[in-house]
Image (cartoon, rainbow, N blue to C red; front, side, top):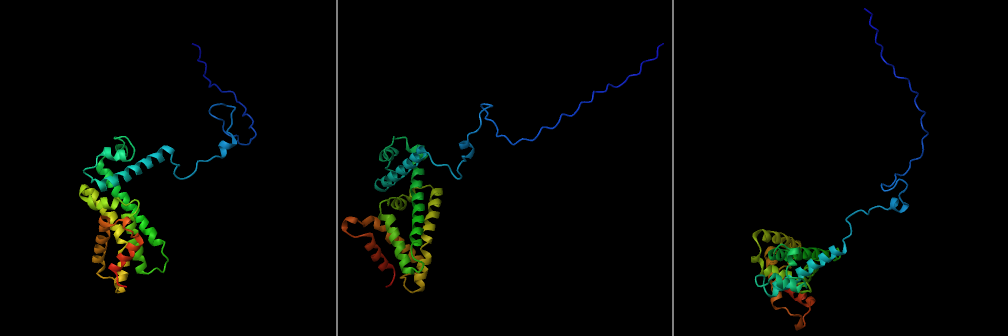
Length: 249
């Protein structure tokens, strides 16, 4: 019997390591569309601007339409009342189709809430701007004069419908909506308290500050019922007479 032939392990031939390629400068990546097209210098240097993107013409138009709906609804709610005003009336006042209001507001109640809340928010902001415009050394009397004049402006000025709507259509809101409006209203009126307290310390206020605030807003808000610019009295003159009622000379 022949002796078995011993097995040997196959040895792979030794390969020489290829020489390293010389380093070259980085090459800009090729376009995905073509292996020979490179990115233009304009595309390389252009960067997306930071912050919110600019609104498109369509988005701006939507904002304008929303504002028209609110302004038209505020006037109708004031003159006709919330219950007697239909969405068709509101759309017609804004120059839109009858179903257009529901694109911006889910219901007539939601539109009423927007009229009140956004109106009071704008009033709060413009009130603070009016106070900030006063000189640092303005007296409490001058501050109260500014507050009263501003309040007459939002009551009786060009866009003066939202506060009367708030006063007369309060019961048309849902309980949750009333809480939201009350928070903005309280913030607006709270700005008056430091001024009234300063006048009380000077002995110039005719009543305790908290009570005086209620009397003042009650008297000023009632002006929407009787004031008429056709009678020849300006808002500045009205402000001077109101101020004389509330504080001592």
